[in-house]
Length: 206
View 1 (cartoon, one colour):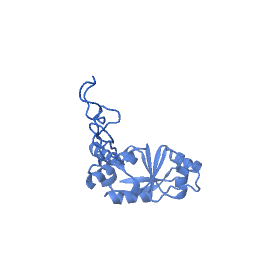
View 2: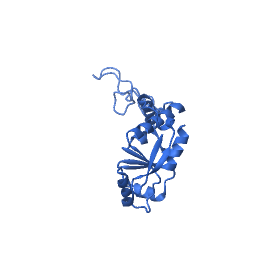
View 3: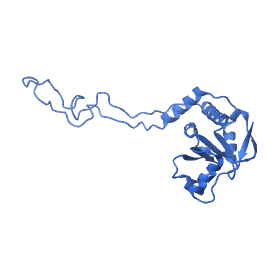
């Protein structure tokens, strides 16, 4: 399979890049992608929610009032679940939400996402992507030359000018090859990848 390498100066094709069909030509596998994305989002949950039971809250040692003769319902403690300041009946406990995903399944989902982005014309390969100065205006001019917006830029190494120029634009995401994952690839309308980054991605997913 060949990918067209675009130039950031004009957007015209600068050449072709041979990539493996086993990475960028696989069919779309929605169940696999759903499994991996769900597991990835679940692993991001902190799981630190905690509440106290009636045995853990402070107080409640003395019987609030005598058993009979008051006209009120009998009560043995003031820290039951029905009382203000009492413990919870089914108190939440810290838990781990992470799900196990095999490496082969994760790589398969990444290949499927990249291949589908390529089929839809949402994955663009450029020779390089680095503005001459840390100016947002220059970065937007480069993106306008590629005719893309709401874009994730994936580079082999993120230069300082690129990072400074994109940090205040919500519709532009930055990631190096090690930081990409299924969620971030699907979070943007378009993905712009440098030639060096696409080589690394291909090497990791083969």
